[in-house]
Structure formats: structure tokens, C-alpha cells
Amino acid sequence: MTTTETPRTDIEFNKRLRVVFDDLQKAFGDVALRHGITFDELGRAITYLTKLVESGDFLLAAIQLIGARPMEVSHGRAYADPEKDGASTWMPTGPAYVPGAPEIENPGVLPMAPNEPGETLIVSGVVRSTSGKPLPGAVIDLWQTTADGRYAGLTPEQAGPLEDLDVVDFDLPKYHLRGKIVTDAEGRYEYRTVVPGVEPAAVPGSPLDDLLNMLGRANSRARHIHAYISHEDHHMLTHQIHFEGDPLVDTVSEGAIARDLIHKTELHDDPAEWEARGLTAPYRTLTCDYVLRPIGFDEVKDPYLLEGFWKQ
Ligand SMILES: [Fe+2]
Image 1: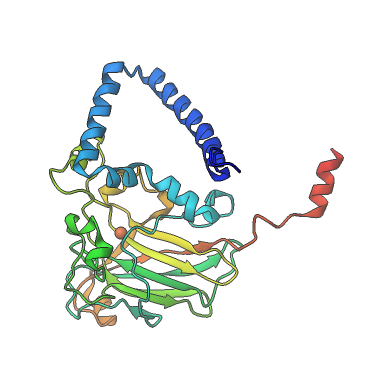
Image 2: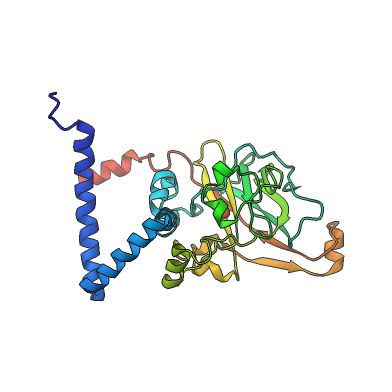
């Protein structure tokens, strides 16, 4: 190859770029025609985007508004089309995961202070395969915020822009409200925690805050509990439990939260009930079953079906 030739990787990249850009350009043209977007409006949008870039908010804005699908393509492909076999809906990891959380008992308690502020929440359920079979020995690696919406365990370097959002409490122990629980012989799990808080998604008064307001999107994350769920012979699921009645589930920046991720809580305010659990105040319960997709599900072909296909 002479020095003037374009490297092969660049040729492949350019081919892909041309195909994707053709599609994007056509999609934008269709939207412009459908909504009558004028040239003046396009100019205003470009001026606004320039302001976002200059402020340093463009990266966070892009991740929040259009990042979810590319993240799913990169890391959640094994859980695409959950409707077809009842597999759980995949959700992005987010920037607050810390590896190495301790294993807790089952039933157990997430690491927290004895007088942890917030409403007590007991989460339980079953981890199953899409065949319906319960999965003993599945590992659920959990992480969530405190009741005031802050994560523990992140260093300033890991926190990055999150430090400006005030979603990190650097004074808490590293694995505060982080832990792994292993399902029992029937695939069941149960742990006690507190209802997580609301994390800010934009610095108040920043260009991103302004943009989210203009779009009618919340400048906070809906309450959620993150989890990685893994089991041999199954694809690892990345998941977030959301809460019924939380108004933010319909206005989060990436669009409304999928309905099957939203879980109802039941309040137990009878003293006899909470005393029986050794608690000193009312508590809530929530049930969440995780459904994992076997590895190789899509690759298994029925030779007779294929034979029938070719005879058509
Ligand atoms: Fe989060």
C-alpha cells in the first residue's frame, strides 16, 4: 500500500458513515416536513446547540437524550425484544456502579447505618429463566442512592461530572447501599433497604437544565434501584427497578420508563406487622421478578423447520 492510499479501516468506517448519515438525513427531512420546521427554527436550534457545547453540557445532554439506544446496542443486545419471550427489560448501567460489593445474606440487609434515614423497603422476588424455570444461585449485584439521592463509593475521578450534580456523598463507606445477594434453591431472594432518593440530572440554572425544562423533561432521575443479575448459561441482565406513583417515570430525559420496570409498593403501617419483622416504624414491600434469557436462545435452530422452509 502506498502512503497516499486510504487505510482499509477508514474505508469501512466511511462506508458505514455514509449509510448511517443517509438514514439520519432522510429521518430529519421527514420530521422537518411533518412538523413544518422552518429555516429560521433550524438556525435557532444550531445556535442553542453551540451554546450547549460552549458551556460543556453537550456531553451530558447527548448521553441523557439520545444515549440510551446506542448503549443498548453496545451492551444490552441480548435483551432486545423482551416481549417475545417475557425476558426482563434491559436498562443502562449508569455511571455509579462500583465493583466488589460484599455478599449479603438471603434474606439480608444492604449495608447501611443502623439509623439509616428514609423509608424502610423490603424487596423480594424470584429470578427465572424465560422458560419459567427458577434459577438457584443467581447473583443480584445491587446499588442505589441514599434517601437523599446520593451514591457512596465513587472517587472524585469516577464521579466526573456527577460531582457537579451533587449526587455523590464522599463521606459514606464505599459499599454503603451496595451488595450482592444469591438466590436460594427456589430462585428466591429478599433484602431490606430504604426507598432510594431522587438524583439531580442537571445543575440548576445550567444550559442543560434549561434545555430539559424546554423539552418538558425532568431535571432529576426517577427513583430507582440498579442491579446486575447473572447466572451461568444466561445472559447478564442490567436492570433498574422504578416505583409506581413516582411522577418522574414519565418525564425522564431519555423518554418514559418502560412499564414493566415500574413496581408497586405496599405500605405496612400496622404496628403488629412491623414489630413482627423487628422494625420500629412502618415499612413498604415491593416484588420484582427478574427473567433472564438463556445464552444461545437465538442461535438454536430446528432442522425440521428449516427443511420445511426450503420445500415451500
Ligand atoms: Fe442511578
